[in-house]
Image 1 (cartoon, rainbow, N blue to C red):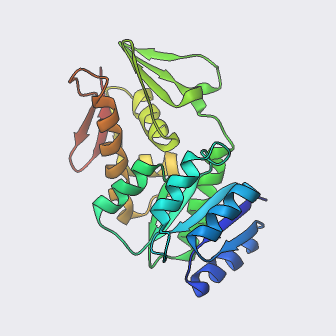
Image 2 (cartoon, one colour):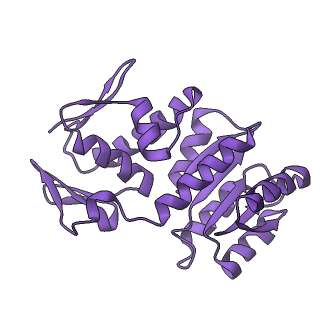
Length: 231
């Protein structure tokens, strides 16, 4: 059982999410605007925040930024709900540090699956950290306990999801990992229409790696198939 905070100014959607998550056994807190939502997040320290984007006065992006800047809430997983479906909107959310992104209208079963996946991820350290050792291939070293990647003498920090994706590709170095396998292994589900989410994460991860890779590209896109890591 986890404490989940739902921040959405749409009363009907907020209540529907609350009912369904309570049926899953969770304790659900509700906020109906960004100001109230951020205040509750600081006060209650939930295990997960379900956050709408389009709200009056303070929008979801701003709330997410404040959650990430606060020392006590910076690692709280955020599932963002929005009617926005453009790539730039997803990039904005992931750049802030949002963990997952669900576009309205959505099926309640899909929301519950994503909530379960996020809660499971935050209750576990990465599989590669279980030995408490760094993993190295060529000049690339994984630092699981800080969700970081070291290339030669430079280090970049990834988000937990970015690190999980990178680690999956790293462990399968030289071989293609399909988009379907990434969805299944990282998110725990494989809807056919969610390939764009992987592309956004890969794009954002590449931008971070480019800052320390001296122009070398480690992740190759296999069009129509998936992605491959190689040194």
